Amino acid sequence: MNAKPFDFASLLPPGLPPPALKWTGAARYNFTGGNNDGDQVPLNDLIAAAKAVLQREGRTLASYGVGSGPQGYRPLREFLATKLWHDAGIRCTFDDILMVSGSLQALDLVNGVLLARGDTVIIEQETYQGVLTRLDRLGVHAVGIPLDHEGMRTDALAAELAALKRRGIRPKYIYTIPTVQNPTGTIMPERRRIELLKLSEEHGVPIFEDDCYADLIWDGRRPPALHAMSETGGVIHIGSFSKSIAPALRVGYIVAGWDILSRILALKTDAGSGALEQMVLAEFCKPHFDEHVPTLRRALRAKLETLMAALDEQFGISAEFDDPKGGIFLWVKLPDSVDTRRLYRAALAAGVAINPGPEWSTNAAHSTSRMRLCFASPSKVEIRNGIAALAEVCRKEFGVPSRIANVAQHVET
Ligand SMILES: Cc1ncc(COP(=O)(O)O)c(C=O)c1O
Image 1 (cartoon, rainbow, N blue to C red):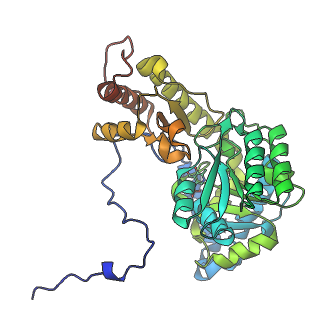
Image 2: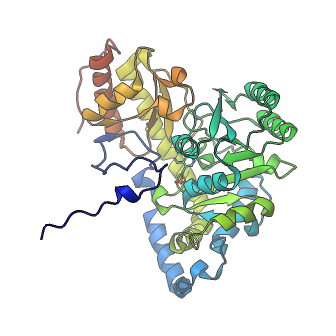
């Protein structure tokens, strides 16, 4: 019998995103995504933590919420409440924290409670692609505010808020990554945080603070979170263990007052995020988090040094960048003649994956010749060889850099 394949296409509702592409493996030199350094995953301590917590409490996995209720595993929320007070000045209890499946779920939940099609939000001009695609899909108008060395420019924000007000538009939130901005790597100083909070309060627009890179500041000097500085409770704070421990765990969190957290919790209809990851993390973090993070930071910094040296060597003055204050990304400006979307396609064919600037920005003109490079997951040898290969593709496609290093091209193994 020759069965006709079932036709799902005729059943799909309008407005779905285009179909996903099949994964065909990572590029040989992969500078994309927010991946971490595999060598730095604290395996032995995670194994010991998993064993200890499962032996002690494993049978609680028989109930949804492992007996901690719908907001997530209580010992992990207690760890976070202490950590956030100590590191970011946030005064909260475990009850003000909702554990979620990565901060991506936090983005979806906060958007879910606050946004409707046609709304306006304010974001940083260069920002996380996952935010731009979500807002686009929701039909929300995103206004990008330019950044400088101290993050979102509050003078430009003030002008934009005033202009929107004149048009009768009250944005739903101001989304910011104030502490190691993605992709630019800046940290907003305390003075500017005060200005930002003042504008938010004056205009009645809450702040949506995404602090997922805040553990990865090179000198460890984290400014107080906007959430900690706010006197009105008008800041929703989100964070993640993806960047400090490992992204595949998919553990993030939201800190907010019960007025809004209760609305967010009502939207989280997945019966809780995976409990095993939360249990292992809680068991690991209490004794080990504070010693693990500085080791991770040193390893990341060393890789960044390798990347910056490789770019200097291979691209010379054709690649401009600021030394980021922490994190896992370098935001690089190439000559104006380079369209990084075209470079992306050509480089991928040569085994090098980069993130083209326009996918991380609301301003096409500003971002066309920029790219984001993640330096955390490739090895130092891969960083050096990958940047050499990228320079070669760039020279072939765009004629820049006109000279590739003054050294013979060699590939390390
Ligand atoms: C700014 C920002 N927010 C949120 C996320 C999502 O992270 P996760 O869902 O792994 O916590 C990322 C990931 O790279 C990010 O860069």
